[in-house]
Length: 76
Image 1 (cartoon, helix red, strand yellow):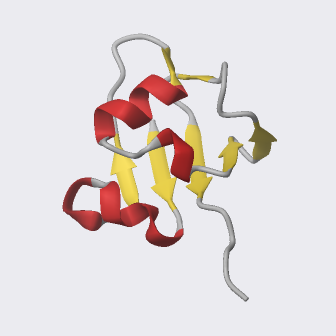
Image 2 (cartoon, rainbow, N blue to C red):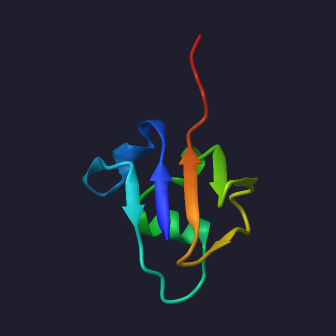
């Protein structure tokens, strides 16, 4: 499984790299995977799984998946 972290979410990834590759022994809930990596769930506002926007809650991922996560847009 490949996870791409956009924006400042790279602050939480190993070595602050935007791409994290994980080998999963079985499907796992994305929220649990983010917790294991160290990315706070509250910081993730947009999730794209294999090219489709999905809800973070209840989404399962497996080895062949590509996940992109992004924080909310803020500013003024």
